[in-house]
Image 1 (cartoon, helix red, strand yellow):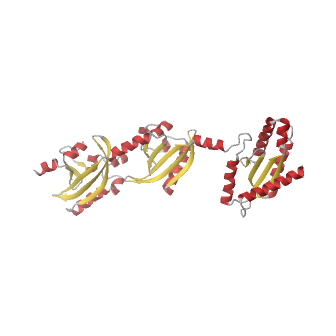
Image 2: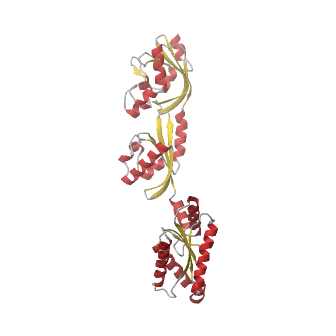
Image 3: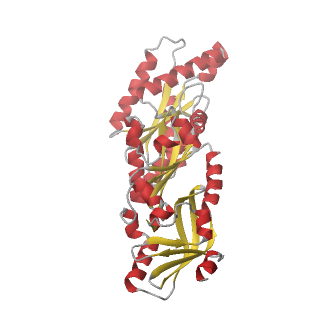
Length: 390
């Protein structure tokens, strides 16, 4: 009679003996799990086909996760103490295989000792894997490359975009590490940022792989299964290219005013030592345009851009029609003067006619005054040199 009542009860019941072997389950459990057979004893983890057994390829009660499993420890305590009072566990997650395949359940349950058996009375089943599958479906539609690794750096989840980009299958990569799939440069980068995420909690860096540039965000995540790494890589190749193009002056090939201001602000923000402003102005460019035409003027601007770039790459900027500026780090004013002399010599040696020349003003960055005042001092020295020439 008692068995009949339990068998048809709306709650789920699992009875265990002192060895944690399943000796009885009611109809609801039988509907969810296919492993229970009369006269065959299975440990609870084996009966549920616990995910930990599959992941670690070991026996129930022998895996590393078994030692920290809340449910397992509560059952052990009840067996040892023969505790009749009910122990209530809310929001317990059970990861297992069922008739419907790999599933995750969240449930509330009571555990107690009854007539020499441990009773698990389970209610409020919530099949969280349905929510997971829905979320997984959404993530698989993302163009971002997304994966989750455990603390042993084994892949536990990868989305479709990741598999497609690296031409991998889910079966080949899950439960394996990067060593099996990637070249040394990618492998080293992945390992470095994975370790940084575990050590610092999160990391965000630009990484290059597969001919693309990605902004990679990694975060340490604590799950019921342990610590892991969530990684989301967004393709920013076009964004980076467009940004670089927006910072280049097309005619001279040098960086433009926007990039100059960014560099100037960085110097002031960091109070960088031994930086100099070099203001440069093409002599008589207006007359050259009026006499020889703008095509000749453009040719001179291109030549001066190439000359400045060859003398000090990435340190000169075109900020106006005939105006250029450099932000240069040197140990002394003498070294700056030598650089300016080198520029003048290259212009003097050019075969372009009319021969181009520059007026130059130099100002060592002084952080006790403003950016504007530093620029005005360099500009003032430039026009003093121009007056001497003309």
